[in-house]
Length: 221
Image (cartoon, rainbow, N blue to C red; front, side, top):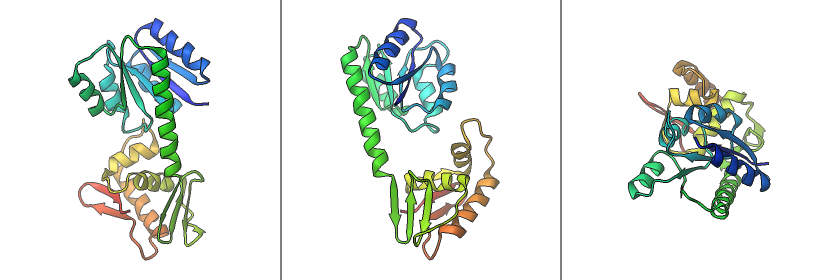
């Protein structure tokens, strides 16, 4: 059952979204403001419907704060119609923009389309192959020459993050926060040690993780 987080400061809209989405078979969580939305990230939603105009923290701000920790589609729901508003939404990390008043048929169709696209993306990245290295994302296992590399949970999380974003540079603090959770306090020295151990286990004649001096690490793929 796919999980959807619906965030809106209007109770009637929250109730409407919850009722209609549950009729389609989704598990729906609701939040009435930005702080509640951030607290509900721990539920690992498959998609977020986010109102832009909220009193304590607008949707763009919430999106910007959580985007480094959630990879699911985020659909903005708002009465703003200016092109710059849409641009701001996409720049904040949103994936779609639905203007109020909206039709439920259109919203449901967009939700389904984004979830299907996400499923295809996940399937495409289920297995990564490079030379003698194989990463089974579904099985959470790394193989070298067909043998289990013996990565710990944290070590695999680092490999998963870097390999899934090949070529992107991540600061050590970013890596720590991503693999240890939203509330983690960054510790760069711990990440450096984990990366050293990962390299010992998977670099069998081929370098996979490159150090970007003064910044962090990136995956070479």
